Length: 154
Ligand SMILES: [Fe+2]
Ligand SMILES: [Fe+2]
Image (cartoon, rainbow, N blue to C red; front, side, top):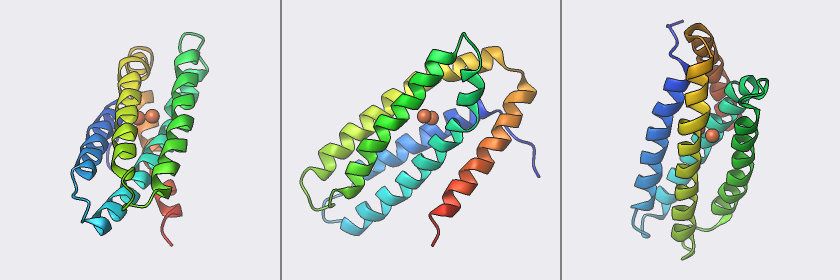
């Protein structure tokens, strides 16, 4: 059991990593069908784990406070919309010419969502919560992510 980092730090770090992976995926040549398929699947799993991690830790904590209730609700709503587009992209064949444009739009919407989180959700959390509590949430975040990733192994 190592020391845990603050959830706000961990989320920011993952945003950078996830965006990097998404950018890498958009740069694959259309001939690399297997890489596209596997890359998309891996990113969708990581995004799902990241999103559920947020939904089960930081968002409920912020929803309890009057000052941050609306930003927490908006973040959850953004997740709902993103899941719809993620499912559509997953259902699109990698040979389909719309696969890449759809992925680029998805990437841009994810980036916008991450900016909302960083500029509002994470900023407020850092302002309102103690370091101890943020580290506790960080531990729970890791646990939720591991649990979600396990559901994809079969
Ligand atoms: Fe999110
Ligand atoms: Fe996030």
